[in-house]
Image (cartoon, rainbow over all chains, first blue to last red; front, side, top):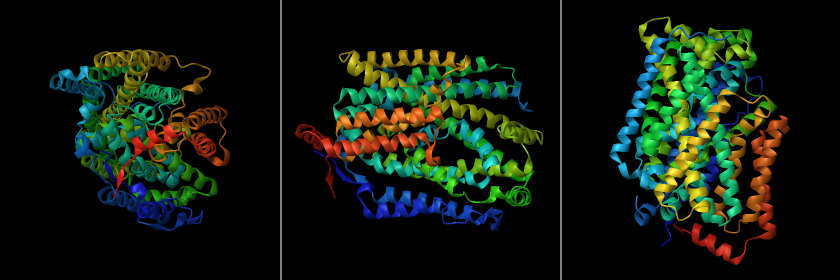
Length: 78
Length: 500
């Protein structure tokens, strides 16, 4: 009996979310002299990257909770 | 400049001795609770596939965060400024990469009782040459990784005890303890001690951050200093820096996710729900570890300006010294921080050693040398070869060779070359075993040669160039040669799932 598999890699929404967030955690969209704009002593570009990174962590949580289900434990113990 | 730690000496020795006794106690406890584990590969190397959320989370944590995260990252942030913020997303990328292969690998691990990453490669390709090459690359990368940890243990112990305990004695003391508790309790010992070590490290790191914020000023004062004296440290990366940033995300994301000792933890999970909960917690740890030590490095820019590259490597020691002189609380907190750093190094080393032994036990001795050996004999063979490897690595750590030392720095570059076989093999039934072998070999050779020559075209790391060549050969070779009917039928049977 083969296990039933619902996995992130086969979901279009996961790929779209991953690509968008991967693009955002690379700070290519800031000018290379953008360090002078600060909020709370942190450059805005760095805060943006941190925000995108947090979104990626939240996206990972959502993906694990909703896009990954198998019945391998029922079939093979666990 | 060698920093003499103000809190070193007998208090350091006390903390290290206490820590050593605690680890040994954990090993004895794990052994007494599972006396039969030496009779079973599953019990010894995977903790009986029964690690719960908390222990699994901390043992994943120990494979990804080591003492170098605390000691090595702040100096890099000190020198690079905000451009080293990449250290936060690259740790998150590791968990993202897991999502591309862990769901399948966990299910297959349960279905086929997989023990090591090589076990999976053998099951998928049924090719002796691919399996042996993958095992050799993993053993080579793991041995170099272990060597790096041994050197770090010696330096850490020597630094924390103010030289009272010499480098060599520190290495021997902790390696004997590590080998003893690993020998006694296998994966359970390693995972339980990882939990203690992880908590110690997190406590130390947060205390360092709180102390730094309180005594050295926060990020605004660091930014004011940088604006006046080093504005480039506030800027985002330029074009070359962006290439480095991108290649670090890919290299670390894939490389650390397919660490053999990390893959083995997927097989060790008690259940799928346990694995998923551990991954969710891991997704936020970069903010609490890499993010925190990054802030410490940034604060250091204003607190201790003008350090040369060599001196900046001592930044955490300098900051800990200054904090330890403030009051008794911070004195002991800094002792615990450095004890935690050494603990973190040991916790990485024990995971690597256990996986090294498992590949010997299961994939070389048990599969090719003596297939009819009992599981007890296979476990014993892995332990003994692991012990011999440790002895050889100790000698290398004490007497580093003057020439060819670069063969000992290849880790990531080599380990990542197993990725196409490991990940593509999970999805592509046509993947050709010969193309996988040639790709893996060519990628490893290219990564090694580029590393030795210091050659980094377009600013992209050598391991990544090797991986590009490796994957290209796998894909083109498979498209040209395909796979035989029997191979495809076997692949369909192995990686076939019901979808929905």
